[in-house]
Image 1 (cartoon, rainbow, N blue to C red):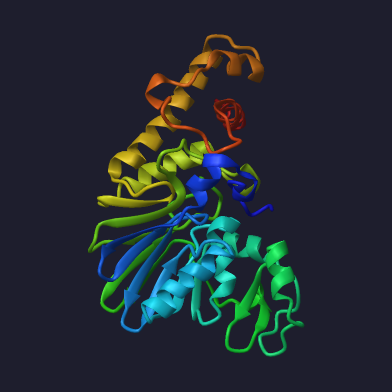
Image 2 (image 1 turned 90 degrees about the vertical axis):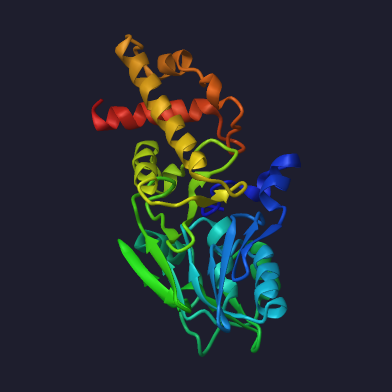
Length: 314
């Protein structure tokens, strides 16, 4: 599926377990993180409501929603989607009660481009829950009525720069600090907790990853990580992998700057082609313990960096 950046359904063995295993972390009484099940999810409880950042993909979303609404007794009223990939955003369609879904305009455009069916909350198409789930179509399942609704019925709020939410006295800064993983990346920052929710701009335990088909760029990602590090966060929720500190983001940035430097050096030394640069540039020893996202070997990063530098005129 086009909106799945990491191809979680195609993974096997430990690759699948790393992305799909659910691991719940209670960071504060009113804030928890659910790792795995696709992308990592963050849940803020406030009063009788809840905010969910990245509601995973259908199947795992139901378990997340049951935990928040049935076990914790909160209704999910707001969603933040860090980007459009299905493993992070696919489950948005399972929260029929959400009053606002915050997205970058490019994320909204991609979700709508993959949508099917009429945009009509009052007269939904005939029930097709099981078939829709098998095909992973972007639809909403409304539990009280059994109605399936299209993505365009979601109450999107577009964020081009920054929106500040105040939820039960808690400030949540929702920001676009630049593109990188895609061209529609948002982050959420909780200043009172010094907590950053970074989506796939940050990977912990993996090399940085971009989706070129969704406007991702290694050079832009490096610049965006610079801006992320300008925030005074102490803890980060990555898009995949375990929770971490500033060192996780710093290391991702170092990888990208080292890659840029090594590709430039190979070009300056006279490497006559992309293939020649690939033959010259090797993964630095300090990053050998970082595996790639499955199916995304180091050679791809070298080729991407070469092409981006060429397009930039370097």
